[in-house]
Figure 1: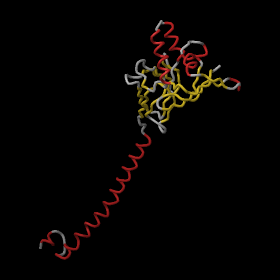
Figure 2: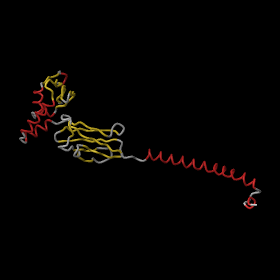
Figure 3: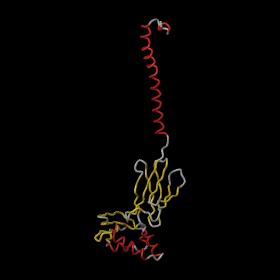
Amino acid sequence: MLSEYSGYKNWVHFKTSIPQNKIQEKKKLKPKWFVFLLLGVLFVTSAYFLIPRTHTFTFCFIDQDRNEPIVKTPIDIIVLNNEQSPFYAKSDSLGCFRWSTKDDFIRFVIRSPYHKTDTIFRNISTITNENIKVSTDDYALMLHYYANGKLEDWKNRKNELSRMIADNAIIFQVLPSGLGIEVYSKHEFIAKLTTPTKSLKSIEIIESKRSKGQIVKLKFRVKS
């Protein structure tokens, strides 16, 4: 009677109809869930590739001579990324600089009163966290000591160079126009680096080799 009241012919009809209805409902619902799942995956994938992401570059500046972070005098930084006005910043108290951008690269100039100016370019695919070695501008440094009468600082620089360079270091200058090389002793080279002549301003280190914390081989040239 209950089966007939519910719209079925009898108990057997009721018992055989329910599972079939459930199976049919599942068959109807399954494709809908699959479509929703597929659309969700496509949306997330599209968002990952189409929405610009922010990249953060971190650089710390190291004095090439001392092999220590440059913290006493902040490094001036000029960011030159495309389609943007130059952005001016300085390294922090740890000698580091951080830059967040949606570009996948960074191009910037570094300047310092006592270090050589350089232009740095890095791509997100290569590196985002790096220690950059910066060359000392000995001409500017020595000129500063001479102009301001800082004799003690000048002597300290000579002593510092003496500690950095091994007594038996091989030091030579590559002469221009294929004229050969000129060999320097340690003391001759230190004298050259601590006298503010015009040639000092144009010195460029080509190659250096260290052993046990000291320079044992040094090759340089004077740019014309």
